Image (cartoon, rainbow, N blue to C red; front, top):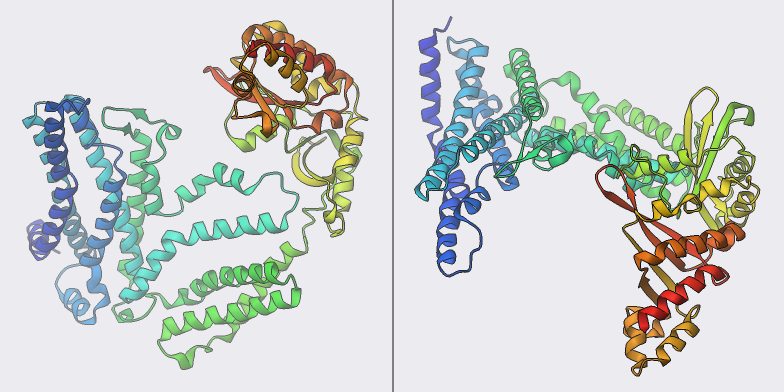
Length: 628
Protein backbone atom coordinates (compact mmCIF):
# COMPACT_ATOMS: atom_id res chain seq x y z
CA UNK A 1 0.00 0.00 0.00
CA UNK A 2 1.02 3.54 -0.62
CA UNK A 3 1.48 5.61 2.53
CA UNK A 4 0.06 9.07 3.11
CA UNK A 5 3.57 10.50 2.85
CA UNK A 6 4.16 8.94 -0.55
CA UNK A 7 0.73 10.07 -1.70
CA UNK A 8 1.40 13.72 -0.84
CA UNK A 9 4.90 13.45 -2.25
CA UNK A 10 3.48 12.16 -5.52
CA UNK A 11 0.91 14.96 -5.54
CA UNK A 12 3.64 17.54 -4.94
CA UNK A 13 5.82 16.08 -7.69
CA UNK A 14 2.88 16.03 -10.08
CA UNK A 15 2.11 19.68 -9.32
CA UNK A 16 5.73 20.55 -10.13
CA UNK A 17 5.25 19.01 -13.56
CA UNK A 18 2.14 21.15 -13.98
CA UNK A 19 3.81 24.40 -12.90
CA UNK A 20 3.34 25.75 -16.44
CA UNK A 21 -0.40 25.04 -16.19
CA UNK A 22 -0.60 26.90 -12.88
CA UNK A 23 1.28 29.84 -14.42
CA UNK A 24 -1.02 29.99 -17.45
CA UNK A 25 -4.13 30.00 -15.25
CA UNK A 26 -2.64 32.61 -12.91
CA UNK A 27 -2.01 34.84 -15.91
CA UNK A 28 -5.49 34.40 -17.38
CA UNK A 29 -7.40 34.84 -14.13
CA UNK A 30 -5.04 37.60 -13.01
CA UNK A 31 -5.93 39.61 -16.10
CA UNK A 32 -9.59 38.67 -15.86
CA UNK A 33 -10.17 39.55 -12.19
CA UNK A 34 -7.61 41.63 -10.19
CA UNK A 35 -6.15 43.48 -13.18
CA UNK A 36 -9.63 44.38 -14.40
CA UNK A 37 -10.57 45.57 -10.91
CA UNK A 38 -7.43 47.67 -10.64
CA UNK A 39 -8.02 49.18 -14.07
CA UNK A 40 -11.67 50.08 -13.52
CA UNK A 41 -11.03 51.44 -10.01
CA UNK A 42 -8.22 53.69 -11.24
CA UNK A 43 -10.28 54.84 -14.22
CA UNK A 44 -13.31 55.49 -12.03
CA UNK A 45 -11.22 57.55 -9.61
CA UNK A 46 -9.92 59.70 -12.46
CA UNK A 47 -13.41 60.11 -13.91
CA UNK A 48 -14.83 61.00 -10.50
CA UNK A 49 -12.26 63.74 -10.05
CA UNK A 50 -13.43 65.18 -13.36
CA UNK A 51 -17.06 64.86 -12.33
CA UNK A 52 -17.78 62.28 -15.02
CA UNK A 53 -18.35 59.27 -12.74
CA UNK A 54 -21.54 59.19 -10.68
CA UNK A 55 -21.00 55.80 -9.04
CA UNK A 56 -19.22 55.44 -5.73
CA UNK A 57 -15.95 53.50 -5.48
CA UNK A 58 -17.81 50.70 -3.69
CA UNK A 59 -20.37 50.42 -6.50
CA UNK A 60 -17.57 50.23 -9.09
CA UNK A 61 -15.82 47.49 -7.11
CA UNK A 62 -19.05 45.53 -6.55
CA UNK A 63 -19.81 45.61 -10.27
CA UNK A 64 -16.50 43.96 -11.13
CA UNK A 65 -16.01 41.29 -8.47
CA UNK A 66 -18.05 38.53 -6.94
CA UNK A 67 -21.18 37.03 -8.44
CA UNK A 68 -22.81 37.11 -11.83
CA UNK A 69 -19.87 37.36 -14.21
CA UNK A 70 -20.67 35.10 -17.15
CA UNK A 71 -17.29 35.74 -18.76
CA UNK A 72 -15.60 34.28 -15.68
CA UNK A 73 -17.77 31.19 -16.02
CA UNK A 74 -16.63 30.56 -19.60
CA UNK A 75 -12.97 30.74 -18.58
CA UNK A 76 -13.62 28.48 -15.58
CA UNK A 77 -15.26 25.85 -17.79
CA UNK A 78 -12.40 26.11 -20.27
CA UNK A 79 -9.92 25.66 -17.42
CA UNK A 80 -11.76 22.48 -16.40
CA UNK A 81 -11.36 21.04 -19.90
CA UNK A 82 -7.67 22.02 -20.09
CA UNK A 83 -6.74 20.66 -16.65
CA UNK A 84 -8.45 17.31 -17.22
CA UNK A 85 -6.74 16.82 -20.56
CA UNK A 86 -3.34 17.77 -19.18
CA UNK A 87 -3.67 15.45 -16.18
CA UNK A 88 -5.10 12.35 -17.85
CA UNK A 89 -3.84 12.51 -21.40
CA UNK A 90 -1.32 9.80 -20.45
CA UNK A 91 -4.25 7.40 -20.95
CA UNK A 92 -3.92 8.00 -24.71
CA UNK A 93 -0.21 7.21 -24.84
CA UNK A 94 1.02 3.60 -24.78
CA UNK A 95 4.43 4.54 -23.37
CA UNK A 96 3.06 6.74 -20.60
CA UNK A 97 0.30 4.38 -19.54
CA UNK A 98 2.77 1.49 -19.34
CA UNK A 99 5.04 3.63 -17.19
CA UNK A 100 2.37 4.80 -14.76
CA UNK A 101 0.76 1.39 -14.45
CA UNK A 102 4.13 -0.18 -13.71
CA UNK A 103 4.54 1.98 -10.59
CA UNK A 104 3.92 0.42 -7.18
CA UNK A 105 0.73 2.37 -6.70
CA UNK A 106 -2.88 1.36 -6.99
CA UNK A 107 -4.95 2.75 -9.82
CA UNK A 108 -7.25 4.49 -7.36
CA UNK A 109 -4.32 6.31 -5.76
CA UNK A 110 -2.89 7.26 -9.15
CA UNK A 111 -6.30 8.62 -10.12
CA UNK A 112 -6.45 10.64 -6.90
CA UNK A 113 -2.94 12.04 -7.40
CA UNK A 114 -3.63 13.13 -10.97
CA UNK A 115 -7.04 14.50 -10.06
CA UNK A 116 -5.98 16.42 -6.96
CA UNK A 117 -2.79 17.90 -8.40
CA UNK A 118 -4.48 19.25 -11.54
CA UNK A 119 -7.47 20.60 -9.60
CA UNK A 120 -5.14 22.40 -7.19
CA UNK A 121 -3.50 24.26 -10.10
CA UNK A 122 -6.86 25.87 -10.79
CA UNK A 123 -7.81 26.45 -7.16
CA UNK A 124 -4.53 28.23 -6.45
CA UNK A 125 -4.77 30.46 -9.52
CA UNK A 126 -8.47 31.27 -9.10
CA UNK A 127 -8.48 31.92 -5.36
CA UNK A 128 -5.34 34.04 -5.50
CA UNK A 129 -6.99 36.20 -8.18
CA UNK A 130 -10.11 36.63 -6.06
CA UNK A 131 -8.05 37.52 -2.98
CA UNK A 132 -6.01 40.06 -4.94
CA UNK A 133 -9.22 41.68 -6.18
CA UNK A 134 -10.44 42.09 -2.59
CA UNK A 135 -7.04 43.47 -1.51
CA UNK A 136 -7.25 46.09 -4.28
CA UNK A 137 -10.63 47.07 -2.89
CA UNK A 138 -9.08 47.38 0.57
CA UNK A 139 -6.42 49.72 -0.81
CA UNK A 140 -9.25 51.95 -2.00
CA UNK A 141 -10.98 51.53 1.37
CA UNK A 142 -14.30 50.29 0.01
CA UNK A 143 -14.47 46.62 1.03
CA UNK A 144 -17.35 45.47 3.24
CA UNK A 145 -18.10 42.23 5.04
CA UNK A 146 -21.03 41.56 2.71
CA UNK A 147 -18.83 41.99 -0.35
CA UNK A 148 -16.23 39.59 1.06
CA UNK A 149 -18.97 37.04 1.72
CA UNK A 150 -20.23 37.26 -1.86
CA UNK A 151 -16.69 36.97 -3.23
CA UNK A 152 -16.34 33.80 -1.13
CA UNK A 153 -19.64 32.46 -2.56
CA UNK A 154 -18.51 33.30 -6.09
CA UNK A 155 -15.22 31.49 -5.46
CA UNK A 156 -17.02 28.43 -4.12
CA UNK A 157 -19.44 28.42 -7.03
CA UNK A 158 -16.55 28.84 -9.48
CA UNK A 159 -14.66 25.88 -8.02
CA UNK A 160 -17.76 23.68 -8.22
CA UNK A 161 -18.33 24.72 -11.84
CA UNK A 162 -14.71 23.91 -12.58
CA UNK A 163 -15.16 20.44 -11.06
CA UNK A 164 -18.27 19.85 -13.20
CA UNK A 165 -16.39 20.76 -16.38
CA UNK A 166 -13.30 18.81 -15.27
CA UNK A 167 -15.19 15.63 -14.43
CA UNK A 168 -17.24 15.74 -17.66
CA UNK A 169 -14.05 16.07 -19.70
CA UNK A 170 -12.46 13.28 -17.69
CA UNK A 171 -15.42 11.03 -18.48
CA UNK A 172 -14.93 11.72 -22.20
CA UNK A 173 -11.22 10.86 -21.91
CA UNK A 174 -11.92 7.55 -20.18
CA UNK A 175 -14.55 6.54 -22.75
CA UNK A 176 -12.15 7.04 -25.66
CA UNK A 177 -8.72 5.87 -26.69
CA UNK A 178 -7.36 8.85 -28.59
CA UNK A 179 -7.50 12.63 -28.43
CA UNK A 180 -9.60 13.17 -31.57
CA UNK A 181 -12.46 11.00 -30.35
CA UNK A 182 -12.17 12.59 -26.91
CA UNK A 183 -13.18 15.90 -28.45
CA UNK A 184 -15.94 14.15 -30.39
CA UNK A 185 -17.17 12.60 -27.14
CA UNK A 186 -17.16 15.99 -25.42
CA UNK A 187 -19.19 17.40 -28.29
CA UNK A 188 -21.71 14.57 -28.00
CA UNK A 189 -21.97 15.05 -24.23
CA UNK A 190 -22.45 18.78 -24.74
CA UNK A 191 -24.93 19.01 -27.62
CA UNK A 192 -26.57 15.62 -28.16
CA UNK A 193 -29.56 16.18 -25.84
CA UNK A 194 -30.33 19.67 -27.24
CA UNK A 195 -30.12 18.30 -30.80
CA UNK A 196 -32.49 15.44 -29.98
CA UNK A 197 -34.79 17.90 -28.24
CA UNK A 198 -34.96 20.20 -31.26
CA UNK A 199 -35.37 17.22 -33.59
CA UNK A 200 -38.44 15.93 -31.76
CA UNK A 201 -39.72 19.49 -31.58
CA UNK A 202 -39.39 19.75 -35.37
CA UNK A 203 -41.27 16.47 -35.82
CA UNK A 204 -44.07 17.67 -33.59
CA UNK A 205 -44.32 20.98 -35.42
CA UNK A 206 -44.30 19.38 -38.88
CA UNK A 207 -46.51 16.33 -38.32
CA UNK A 208 -48.62 16.90 -35.21
CA UNK A 209 -50.88 19.50 -36.80
CA UNK A 210 -53.34 19.54 -33.94
CA UNK A 211 -50.97 20.14 -31.00
CA UNK A 212 -52.30 23.10 -29.06
CA UNK A 213 -48.96 24.75 -28.29
CA UNK A 214 -46.49 26.31 -30.66
CA UNK A 215 -42.70 26.13 -31.03
CA UNK A 216 -42.02 29.47 -29.34
CA UNK A 217 -44.26 28.62 -26.41
CA UNK A 218 -42.73 25.18 -26.10
CA UNK A 219 -39.23 26.60 -26.03
CA UNK A 220 -40.16 29.07 -23.33
CA UNK A 221 -41.81 26.46 -21.15
CA UNK A 222 -39.37 23.57 -21.61
CA UNK A 223 -36.08 25.45 -21.56
CA UNK A 224 -35.07 23.57 -18.40
CA UNK A 225 -34.47 20.55 -20.63
CA UNK A 226 -31.67 22.50 -22.25
CA UNK A 227 -30.36 23.82 -18.93
CA UNK A 228 -29.77 20.29 -17.69
CA UNK A 229 -28.61 18.86 -21.03
CA UNK A 230 -24.91 18.79 -20.10
CA UNK A 231 -22.62 19.78 -17.21
CA UNK A 232 -21.43 22.80 -19.19
CA UNK A 233 -24.95 23.98 -19.99
CA UNK A 234 -25.94 23.48 -16.36
CA UNK A 235 -23.06 25.63 -15.14
CA UNK A 236 -23.90 28.42 -17.59
CA UNK A 237 -27.56 28.23 -16.53
CA UNK A 238 -26.48 28.85 -12.94
CA UNK A 239 -25.54 32.38 -14.04
CA UNK A 240 -28.75 33.02 -15.96
CA UNK A 241 -31.56 31.62 -13.79
CA UNK A 242 -31.80 34.64 -11.47
CA UNK A 243 -35.14 35.03 -9.73
CA UNK A 244 -36.59 31.88 -11.30
CA UNK A 245 -34.26 29.84 -9.12
CA UNK A 246 -35.13 31.73 -5.94
CA UNK A 247 -31.96 33.82 -5.95
CA UNK A 248 -31.77 37.05 -3.97
CA UNK A 249 -29.95 40.21 -5.01
CA UNK A 250 -26.66 40.93 -3.26
CA UNK A 251 -24.23 43.82 -3.58
CA UNK A 252 -22.32 42.13 -6.43
CA UNK A 253 -25.09 40.16 -8.14
CA UNK A 254 -27.66 37.42 -7.67
CA UNK A 255 -26.75 35.18 -4.74
CA UNK A 256 -26.98 31.41 -5.42
CA UNK A 257 -28.96 29.45 -2.87
CA UNK A 258 -27.74 26.34 -1.09
CA UNK A 259 -29.72 24.07 -3.39
CA UNK A 260 -27.92 25.36 -6.49
CA UNK A 261 -24.50 24.82 -4.92
CA UNK A 262 -25.49 21.32 -3.82
CA UNK A 263 -26.62 20.51 -7.36
CA UNK A 264 -23.24 21.54 -8.74
CA UNK A 265 -21.49 19.45 -6.11
CA UNK A 266 -23.70 16.45 -6.88
CA UNK A 267 -23.02 16.66 -10.64
CA UNK A 268 -19.26 16.86 -10.06
CA UNK A 269 -19.30 14.02 -7.51
CA UNK A 270 -21.36 11.67 -9.67
CA UNK A 271 -19.28 12.23 -12.80
CA UNK A 272 -16.06 11.81 -10.81
CA UNK A 273 -17.30 8.57 -9.25
CA UNK A 274 -18.31 7.19 -12.66
CA UNK A 275 -14.91 8.19 -14.06
CA UNK A 276 -13.10 6.40 -11.25
CA UNK A 277 -15.12 3.23 -11.84
CA UNK A 278 -14.34 3.35 -15.55
CA UNK A 279 -10.66 3.89 -14.87
CA UNK A 280 -10.55 0.80 -12.66
CA UNK A 281 -11.89 -1.45 -15.45
CA UNK A 282 -10.33 0.33 -18.43
CA UNK A 283 -7.69 -1.81 -20.16
CA UNK A 284 -4.32 -0.38 -21.13
CA UNK A 285 -4.56 -2.02 -24.56
CA UNK A 286 -7.34 0.35 -25.69
CA UNK A 287 -4.85 3.16 -26.39
CA UNK A 288 -5.26 4.30 -29.99
CA UNK A 289 -8.80 2.96 -30.37
CA UNK A 290 -11.71 5.29 -30.98
CA UNK A 291 -13.63 3.97 -27.99
CA UNK A 292 -12.14 2.45 -24.87
CA UNK A 293 -14.96 -0.05 -24.48
CA UNK A 294 -15.52 -1.89 -27.76
CA UNK A 295 -18.89 -3.30 -26.71
CA UNK A 296 -20.32 0.22 -26.82
CA UNK A 297 -19.33 0.83 -30.46
CA UNK A 298 -22.58 -0.44 -31.94
CA UNK A 299 -24.74 1.41 -29.42
CA UNK A 300 -22.89 4.70 -29.93
CA UNK A 301 -23.11 4.29 -33.70
CA UNK A 302 -26.88 3.75 -33.68
CA UNK A 303 -27.46 6.55 -31.20
CA UNK A 304 -25.77 8.94 -33.65
CA UNK A 305 -26.85 7.57 -37.03
CA UNK A 306 -30.58 7.18 -36.35
CA UNK A 307 -31.06 10.93 -35.62
CA UNK A 308 -28.94 11.68 -38.72
CA UNK A 309 -31.27 9.57 -40.86
CA UNK A 310 -34.31 11.26 -39.31
CA UNK A 311 -32.98 14.72 -40.13
CA UNK A 312 -32.36 13.58 -43.72
CA UNK A 313 -35.91 12.25 -44.00
CA UNK A 314 -37.32 15.50 -42.67
CA UNK A 315 -35.34 17.44 -45.29
CA UNK A 316 -36.63 15.10 -48.02
CA UNK A 317 -40.20 15.64 -46.79
CA UNK A 318 -39.82 19.41 -46.98
CA UNK A 319 -38.24 19.22 -50.46
CA UNK A 320 -40.36 16.66 -52.32
CA UNK A 321 -42.89 15.15 -49.85
CA UNK A 322 -42.54 11.72 -51.47
CA UNK A 323 -42.44 8.56 -49.28
CA UNK A 324 -40.11 6.88 -51.76
CA UNK A 325 -37.58 9.70 -51.69
CA UNK A 326 -37.93 9.99 -47.94
CA UNK A 327 -36.97 6.35 -47.52
CA UNK A 328 -34.10 6.78 -49.99
CA UNK A 329 -32.78 9.66 -47.88
CA UNK A 330 -33.12 7.55 -44.72
CA UNK A 331 -31.22 4.66 -46.27
CA UNK A 332 -28.54 6.81 -47.93
CA UNK A 333 -27.73 9.03 -44.98
CA UNK A 334 -28.12 6.22 -42.48
CA UNK A 335 -25.61 4.13 -44.46
CA UNK A 336 -23.27 7.10 -44.84
CA UNK A 337 -23.39 7.78 -41.11
CA UNK A 338 -22.62 4.14 -40.31
CA UNK A 339 -19.71 4.08 -42.76
CA UNK A 340 -18.22 7.27 -41.33
CA UNK A 341 -18.52 5.92 -37.78
CA UNK A 342 -16.93 2.63 -38.85
CA UNK A 343 -14.05 4.52 -40.46
CA UNK A 344 -13.54 6.50 -37.24
CA UNK A 345 -13.49 3.24 -35.29
CA UNK A 346 -11.12 1.31 -37.59
CA UNK A 347 -9.18 4.00 -39.42
CA UNK A 348 -9.48 1.83 -42.54
CA UNK A 349 -11.84 2.74 -45.38
CA UNK A 350 -11.94 -0.89 -46.47
CA UNK A 351 -13.77 -1.80 -43.28
CA UNK A 352 -16.46 0.86 -43.69
CA UNK A 353 -19.05 -1.82 -44.50
CA UNK A 354 -17.88 -4.39 -41.99
CA UNK A 355 -21.12 -4.20 -39.96
CA UNK A 356 -23.88 -4.02 -42.56
CA UNK A 357 -26.54 -4.96 -40.04
CA UNK A 358 -25.96 -1.59 -38.36
CA UNK A 359 -27.14 0.06 -41.58
CA UNK A 360 -30.25 -2.12 -41.64
CA UNK A 361 -31.11 -1.36 -38.01
CA UNK A 362 -30.55 2.37 -38.58
CA UNK A 363 -32.80 2.42 -41.65
CA UNK A 364 -35.56 0.33 -40.10
CA UNK A 365 -35.70 2.25 -36.81
CA UNK A 366 -35.51 5.65 -38.51
CA UNK A 367 -38.16 4.65 -41.05
CA UNK A 368 -40.48 3.37 -38.31
CA UNK A 369 -40.17 6.62 -36.37
CA UNK A 370 -40.43 8.92 -39.40
CA UNK A 371 -43.33 7.22 -41.16
CA UNK A 372 -45.07 6.72 -37.84
CA UNK A 373 -45.16 10.50 -37.51
CA UNK A 374 -45.76 11.16 -41.19
CA UNK A 375 -48.86 8.95 -41.47
CA UNK A 376 -50.06 9.62 -37.93
CA UNK A 377 -50.01 5.96 -36.95
CA UNK A 378 -51.00 6.77 -33.37
CA UNK A 379 -54.02 8.80 -34.52
CA UNK A 380 -52.91 11.92 -32.67
CA UNK A 381 -54.25 14.36 -35.28
CA UNK A 382 -57.57 12.54 -35.71
CA UNK A 383 -58.28 12.14 -32.00
CA UNK A 384 -61.96 12.75 -31.29
CA UNK A 385 -63.64 11.15 -28.27
CA UNK A 386 -67.28 10.15 -28.39
CA UNK A 387 -69.74 12.68 -27.02
CA UNK A 388 -70.72 10.24 -24.31
CA UNK A 389 -67.15 10.27 -22.99
CA UNK A 390 -67.03 14.07 -22.61
CA UNK A 391 -68.09 15.98 -19.50
CA UNK A 392 -67.40 19.47 -20.89
CA UNK A 393 -65.54 21.28 -23.68
CA UNK A 394 -64.23 24.71 -24.56
CA UNK A 395 -62.74 26.42 -27.60
CA UNK A 396 -61.13 29.74 -28.39
CA UNK A 397 -59.51 31.32 -31.43
CA UNK A 398 -55.84 32.27 -31.49
CA UNK A 399 -56.57 36.02 -31.44
CA UNK A 400 -58.51 36.06 -28.20
CA UNK A 401 -56.85 38.76 -26.09
CA UNK A 402 -59.22 38.87 -23.12
CA UNK A 403 -58.11 38.28 -19.54
CA UNK A 404 -59.75 35.46 -17.56
CA UNK A 405 -57.24 35.37 -14.68
CA UNK A 406 -58.01 35.35 -11.00
CA UNK A 407 -55.48 36.56 -8.43
CA UNK A 408 -54.46 32.95 -7.83
CA UNK A 409 -54.20 31.90 -11.48
CA UNK A 410 -52.21 34.80 -12.93
CA UNK A 411 -49.10 33.63 -14.77
CA UNK A 412 -46.72 34.75 -17.49
CA UNK A 413 -46.30 31.18 -18.75
CA UNK A 414 -47.84 31.26 -22.23
CA UNK A 415 -48.81 27.61 -22.20
CA UNK A 416 -50.61 28.05 -18.87
CA UNK A 417 -52.24 31.24 -20.16
CA UNK A 418 -53.90 29.23 -22.93
CA UNK A 419 -54.97 26.52 -20.50
CA UNK A 420 -56.41 29.13 -18.13
CA UNK A 421 -58.34 30.68 -20.99
CA UNK A 422 -59.80 27.33 -22.04
CA UNK A 423 -60.65 26.52 -18.41
CA UNK A 424 -62.60 29.76 -18.11
CA UNK A 425 -64.64 29.01 -21.25
CA UNK A 426 -65.41 25.40 -20.37
CA UNK A 427 -69.09 24.50 -20.72
CA UNK A 428 -71.24 21.39 -20.41
CA UNK A 429 -73.42 22.54 -23.32
CA UNK A 430 -70.67 21.78 -25.81
CA UNK A 431 -72.55 20.47 -28.88
CA UNK A 432 -71.50 23.42 -31.13
CA UNK A 433 -67.89 23.13 -29.89
CA UNK A 434 -67.91 19.42 -30.68
CA UNK A 435 -69.11 20.13 -34.21
CA UNK A 436 -66.19 22.51 -34.76
CA UNK A 437 -63.72 19.88 -33.54
CA UNK A 438 -65.38 17.17 -35.63
CA UNK A 439 -65.20 19.23 -38.81
CA UNK A 440 -61.52 20.01 -38.13
CA UNK A 441 -60.64 16.34 -37.54
CA UNK A 442 -62.39 15.30 -40.75
CA UNK A 443 -60.34 17.88 -42.67
CA UNK A 444 -56.94 16.91 -41.21
CA UNK A 445 -55.90 14.84 -44.24
CA UNK A 446 -57.87 16.87 -46.80
CA UNK A 447 -55.31 19.01 -48.64
CA UNK A 448 -58.04 20.88 -50.55
CA UNK A 449 -59.41 22.13 -47.23
CA UNK A 450 -56.12 23.90 -46.46
CA UNK A 451 -56.46 25.89 -49.67
CA UNK A 452 -59.42 27.69 -48.09
CA UNK A 453 -58.64 31.41 -47.88
CA UNK A 454 -60.48 31.83 -44.62
CA UNK A 455 -59.09 29.46 -42.01
CA UNK A 456 -58.77 30.13 -38.30
CA UNK A 457 -56.58 28.51 -35.66
CA UNK A 458 -58.81 27.34 -32.81
CA UNK A 459 -57.73 25.65 -29.57
CA UNK A 460 -60.05 23.06 -28.05
CA UNK A 461 -60.13 21.40 -24.65
CA UNK A 462 -61.82 18.04 -24.01
CA UNK A 463 -62.62 17.41 -20.35
CA UNK A 464 -63.51 13.72 -20.23
CA UNK A 465 -65.77 12.12 -17.67
CA UNK A 466 -62.87 10.05 -16.34
CA UNK A 467 -61.12 13.30 -15.37
CA UNK A 468 -58.63 13.34 -18.26
CA UNK A 469 -58.04 16.70 -19.97
CA UNK A 470 -56.95 16.75 -23.61
CA UNK A 471 -55.92 19.85 -25.55
CA UNK A 472 -55.82 20.23 -29.31
CA UNK A 473 -55.40 23.06 -31.84
CA UNK A 474 -57.21 22.93 -35.18
CA UNK A 475 -57.44 24.87 -38.40
CA UNK A 476 -61.16 25.41 -39.01
CA UNK A 477 -63.35 27.20 -41.51
CA UNK A 478 -63.93 30.70 -40.11
CA UNK A 479 -67.57 30.96 -41.18
CA UNK A 480 -68.37 27.57 -39.66
CA UNK A 481 -66.59 28.55 -36.43
CA UNK A 482 -68.69 31.71 -35.94
CA UNK A 483 -71.83 29.90 -37.06
CA UNK A 484 -71.35 27.39 -34.23
CA UNK A 485 -70.50 30.14 -31.73
CA UNK A 486 -73.89 31.73 -32.39
CA UNK A 487 -75.49 28.41 -31.44
CA UNK A 488 -74.01 28.57 -27.95
CA UNK A 489 -76.39 29.52 -25.08
CA UNK A 490 -77.06 33.23 -24.75
CA UNK A 491 -75.40 33.46 -21.34
CA UNK A 492 -72.20 32.06 -22.86
CA UNK A 493 -71.48 35.47 -24.41
CA UNK A 494 -70.93 36.97 -20.94
CA UNK A 495 -68.34 34.27 -20.30
CA UNK A 496 -66.69 34.69 -23.70
CA UNK A 497 -66.46 38.49 -23.32
CA UNK A 498 -65.39 39.22 -19.71
CA UNK A 499 -66.05 42.94 -20.25
CA UNK A 500 -69.78 42.18 -20.07
CA UNK A 501 -69.28 41.32 -16.38
CA UNK A 502 -67.41 44.52 -15.48
CA UNK A 503 -68.98 47.00 -13.08
CA UNK A 504 -67.99 50.54 -12.15
CA UNK A 505 -66.00 49.40 -9.12
CA UNK A 506 -63.86 47.09 -11.25
CA UNK A 507 -63.40 49.70 -13.99
CA UNK A 508 -61.99 52.10 -11.41
CA UNK A 509 -59.10 49.66 -10.92
CA UNK A 510 -58.12 49.76 -14.60
CA UNK A 511 -54.81 51.59 -14.84
CA UNK A 512 -55.03 52.73 -18.46
CA UNK A 513 -57.36 52.60 -21.45
CA UNK A 514 -56.69 53.49 -25.10
CA UNK A 515 -58.37 53.09 -28.44
CA UNK A 516 -57.16 52.44 -31.94
CA UNK A 517 -59.72 53.32 -34.59
CA UNK A 518 -59.98 53.70 -38.35
CA UNK A 519 -60.18 57.47 -38.64
CA UNK A 520 -62.93 57.43 -41.27
CA UNK A 521 -65.35 56.19 -38.60
CA UNK A 522 -65.09 59.38 -36.54
CA UNK A 523 -63.65 61.61 -39.23
CA UNK A 524 -66.71 63.81 -39.26
CA UNK A 525 -66.48 64.38 -35.53
CA UNK A 526 -62.78 65.19 -35.85
CA UNK A 527 -63.34 67.67 -38.64
CA UNK A 528 -66.15 69.42 -36.79
CA UNK A 529 -64.03 69.73 -33.67
CA UNK A 530 -60.95 70.79 -35.64
CA UNK A 531 -62.92 73.57 -37.38
CA UNK A 532 -63.07 75.29 -34.03
CA UNK A 533 -59.31 75.45 -33.97
CA UNK A 534 -57.40 77.85 -36.23
CA UNK A 535 -54.68 75.28 -36.88
CA UNK A 536 -56.68 72.41 -38.35
CA UNK A 537 -53.79 70.24 -39.48
CA UNK A 538 -51.78 70.62 -36.27
CA UNK A 539 -54.81 69.75 -34.15
CA UNK A 540 -55.71 66.70 -36.18
CA UNK A 541 -52.14 65.52 -36.22
CA UNK A 542 -51.88 66.04 -32.48
CA UNK A 543 -54.92 63.89 -31.94
CA UNK A 544 -54.02 61.11 -34.32
CA UNK A 545 -50.56 60.56 -32.94
CA UNK A 546 -49.16 60.59 -36.50
CA UNK A 547 -47.88 63.27 -38.83
CA UNK A 548 -51.14 63.41 -40.83
CA UNK A 549 -54.49 61.67 -40.97
CA UNK A 550 -53.59 60.23 -44.37
CA UNK A 551 -52.53 57.05 -42.63
CA UNK A 552 -56.24 56.52 -41.97
CA UNK A 553 -55.68 55.39 -38.42
CA UNK A 554 -56.06 57.19 -35.13
CA UNK A 555 -55.02 56.48 -31.56
CA UNK A 556 -56.05 58.06 -28.32
CA UNK A 557 -56.05 57.68 -24.54
CA UNK A 558 -59.35 57.46 -22.72
CA UNK A 559 -59.56 59.86 -19.74
CA UNK A 560 -60.06 57.95 -16.49
CA UNK A 561 -63.42 59.66 -15.87
CA UNK A 562 -64.65 58.44 -19.27
CA UNK A 563 -63.60 54.77 -19.04
CA UNK A 564 -66.81 53.65 -17.33
CA UNK A 565 -68.96 55.57 -19.85
CA UNK A 566 -67.06 53.86 -22.66
CA UNK A 567 -67.42 50.41 -21.08
CA UNK A 568 -71.17 50.85 -20.53
CA UNK A 569 -71.67 51.90 -24.14
CA UNK A 570 -69.54 49.02 -25.40
CA UNK A 571 -71.45 46.50 -23.27
CA UNK A 572 -74.74 47.60 -24.86
CA UNK A 573 -73.33 47.34 -28.39
CA UNK A 574 -71.54 44.04 -27.77
CA UNK A 575 -74.73 42.29 -26.63
CA UNK A 576 -76.50 43.34 -29.82
CA UNK A 577 -73.80 42.21 -32.25
CA UNK A 578 -72.81 38.75 -33.41
CA UNK A 579 -69.42 37.19 -32.66
CA UNK A 580 -68.46 37.53 -36.30
CA UNK A 581 -69.41 41.20 -36.57
CA UNK A 582 -67.33 41.95 -33.50
CA UNK A 583 -64.36 39.93 -34.73
CA UNK A 584 -63.95 41.36 -38.22
CA UNK A 585 -62.77 44.90 -37.66
CA UNK A 586 -59.53 46.77 -37.26
CA UNK A 587 -60.92 48.95 -34.46
CA UNK A 588 -59.97 48.11 -30.92
CA UNK A 589 -60.23 49.16 -27.29
CA UNK A 590 -57.27 48.43 -25.00
CA UNK A 591 -57.66 48.04 -21.25
CA UNK A 592 -54.86 47.41 -18.78
CA UNK A 593 -56.58 45.28 -16.16
CA UNK A 594 -55.25 44.57 -12.66
CA UNK A 595 -54.21 40.91 -12.32
CA UNK A 596 -52.24 38.93 -9.78
CA UNK A 597 -51.36 39.92 -6.24
CA UNK A 598 -48.31 42.07 -6.97
CA UNK A 599 -49.89 44.99 -8.78
CA UNK A 600 -49.39 43.38 -12.20
CA UNK A 601 -51.48 44.42 -15.18
CA UNK A 602 -52.48 42.55 -18.32
CA UNK A 603 -53.76 43.93 -21.61
CA UNK A 604 -57.21 43.07 -22.93
CA UNK A 605 -58.14 44.06 -26.48
CA UNK A 606 -61.77 44.30 -27.58
CA UNK A 607 -62.83 44.88 -31.20
CA UNK A 608 -65.72 46.92 -32.52
CA UNK A 609 -67.07 48.12 -35.85
CA UNK A 610 -68.76 51.27 -37.15
CA UNK A 611 -72.12 49.78 -36.22
CA UNK A 612 -71.24 50.02 -32.51
CA UNK A 613 -73.08 53.34 -32.39
CA UNK A 614 -73.06 53.83 -28.62
CA UNK A 615 -69.32 53.17 -28.46
CA UNK A 616 -68.64 55.52 -31.39
CA UNK A 617 -70.65 58.26 -29.73
CA UNK A 618 -68.51 58.15 -26.58
CA UNK A 619 -65.32 58.06 -28.67
CA UNK A 620 -66.50 61.11 -30.63
CA UNK A 621 -66.89 63.00 -27.36
CA UNK A 622 -63.42 61.93 -26.24
CA UNK A 623 -61.86 62.80 -29.61
CA UNK A 624 -63.62 66.15 -29.82
CA UNK A 625 -62.52 67.14 -26.33
CA UNK A 626 -58.92 66.15 -27.04
CA UNK A 627 -58.79 68.58 -29.99
CA UNK A 628 -60.65 71.41 -28.34
